[in-house]
Image (cartoon, rainbow, N blue to C red; front, side, top):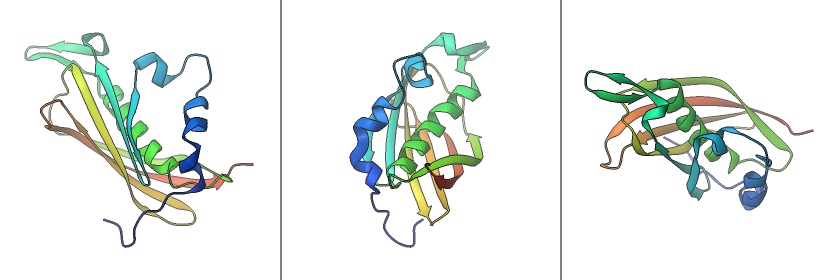
Length: 150
């Protein structure tokens, strides 16, 4: 966990900028239908209504493709990281790991991302993916490298 509390950066107040930074054209959030349902310093919650079209058929029923599971986890961690940034900073993902605990089935999925630790140059994040019953389906960790926005 953290050795000190996670505090909001200047970007936390810029939630409108974060929403509009996706532009008017196609993007991952609009294409898949992701929606941010939680937002606090060092944390972000993203939900998605995953349909069978985003998966494949198995003998046990449809399963959502792992790359799309990774995308929602990454989005939750990215949002959490964003809340800690100042206006002169941006981040790029340097490392991303995912563990799939059980098959992710179609339905409403909720990814909860948190910042574990922030330094001057790196942000360490984690996320977990849940179904509507609260079952943990997958978990992820990433390392975000901070860079000047200019």
